[in-house]
Amino acid sequence: MKYIADFHIHSKYSRATAHDISVEKLDQWAKIKGIQILGTGDFTHPKWFSELREQLIPATEGIYELKSKNPNSKFQIPNTKFILTTEISCIYKKNNKTRRIHLVIFAPDFETAEKINQNLGEKYNLKSDGRPILGLDAKELVKILLDISPKIFIVPAHIWTPWFSLFGSMSGFDSVEECFEEMTPNIFALETGLSSDPLMNWQWSYLDKYTLISNSDAHSPSKLGREANVFEFKKPPSYDDIINAIKTRKNFLSTIEFFPEEGKYHFDGHRDCKIRMTPTETKRAGGLCPKCRRPITIGVAYRVAALADRKEAIKPKNAPDFKSLIPLTEIIHEVKKITKLKSVELEYQNLTEKGRGEFNVLLNLSEKELSDISTPLLAQAIIKMRKGEVVKEAGYDGVFGKISVFGKESQIIKTFQKKLTNQKSLFK
Image (cartoon, rainbow, N blue to C red; front, side):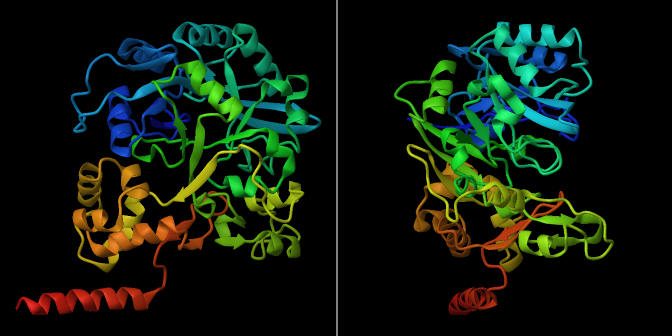
């Protein structure tokens, strides 16, 4: 059976997140999306940890689910399975530079998670944010965690993001070893982040030995599954099964990706001046904004190109495949501008209920099946997206990019609208 998993999310106790996030709501939205395994996020926060312990029970070893069937869910399918995860921000000085490194932490059970919280809580304030900030070298954090339990799994988060990541242009390093030193052998996987995809990472042969995973980093339940991982297991997996699949790449089929241009740090730029620049343009400008002459934020594409050693991407042996998708609400919104479709919310509900989840709609239903539950134009839009036939406007300096299916293809739109008019005239 295939399992779609999103490991990196946040609770209502993290900054800039939805205030109504609950375990039940996460379960409900995971079903709407078609996600079978969900990270809890934020288990280091005392209040969220208490809610998790109160509402979750063991499903398999190290995997949990709601105590009872979710009364808020319209989907009559098994409860979502949860794996204990959190994100920790390490901010510290190293080699005369301030480093801001985010790590996703997996814990094998509540007892281990509690030990993590007790250990870190003695020196750091875990109550202030669901993603706690520690004045601690990332290498030292890895030591602390593995001393608690060798089954704890650590993944550097969104590794290319400029300000808070392993390779980020503003505070990162040029290698895993430079960051983690003697603890490097304990790092098996890297999270690509919304602004990069595996194809970009495959341009740097150094990364071939690391498994690339993708997660939503969702700050609200509706954003679950923006990126995700697809596994295949013969039976419901345990914590060990999932971690081993990531380490060995066995049973790890693919990742589900944003088109990386939609990420808010794909290209370089200066948000205040509304300036977006390609890496080539940035080099010509000497890294300065053409309007205000201040330094621009160097994005992911530039940083990948700076470290890459291949002209073209080469897929590493046994690396999972990947598929790039546009979130369904964005496709509906684009089609709604062309046709008199229902409101985006109503059409999303219609499609996910009749289509048995967002991922099933985006990945599996045929064009005819899509047309039967919506409109021919929306079906055409989804098929075009699957083929990668999209129009891209890259994000920069914290501004999300825009990926559209039709873009300025006005002739397609006019032809479709003409068909609608002709069809209506037949019945007058």
